Each structure stands twice: as C-alpha cells, then as structure tokens.
Image (cartoon, rainbow, N blue to C red; front, top):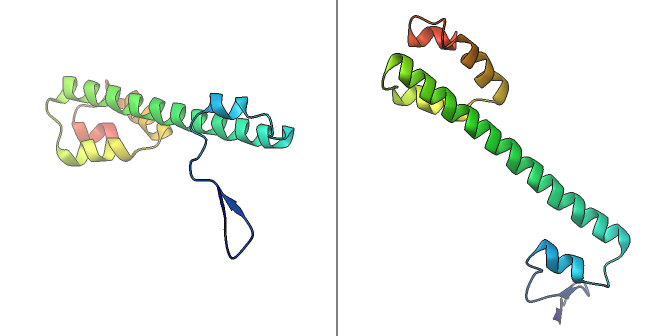
Length: 105
C-alpha cells in the first residue's frame, strides 16, 4: 500500500480477486458490501442476457442452414449483431419463408 502524492488516496498494489474474498473482508461497511453485491449481480445478469442472445443467434443460424443450406457471410454477420427481439421475429419466419431473404423481411 502506498499513498498517492496528489490526492492523499491510498493505492493498494493488488485488487481483491473474488466475490468470496470480498465477503471475508470485515472492514467493509454494509453500504460498500451492498454496492459490491449489486455490481456482481449486474455482471451476472448482463452475462446471462448475452448468453441467451448468443444462443438464439446460434439456433437461428442452424435452422436457416438446415432450410436454405450454407449461409452467406453477410447473413451470419447480421445474425451476430441482432438484438434478441429481432432474432425472435426472424425465427418466427423461418418455416414460412420460401427464400432466405424472406426470413429477414
């Protein structure tokens, strides 16, 4: 631990590495623990949402490939950049679309 010359802040050489280590630290106030817990939960929620979107994109890719054969790179890129609601809308059209492009209209 050292003191920052400009602001009298203490700088620790190593950060806390895990949620478990943070929970063991007794000198954290209740409010600090609450914000740390919220931060961890927010990270978990964002990770779960990203995983669900990726899963939807992968499944839609498989369905489109099964129906229309190999997909052009532009379609795979579009699937990878889509939001969950858009992926759902495209998935609803997969079985009715006669042409690949019709699934994206």
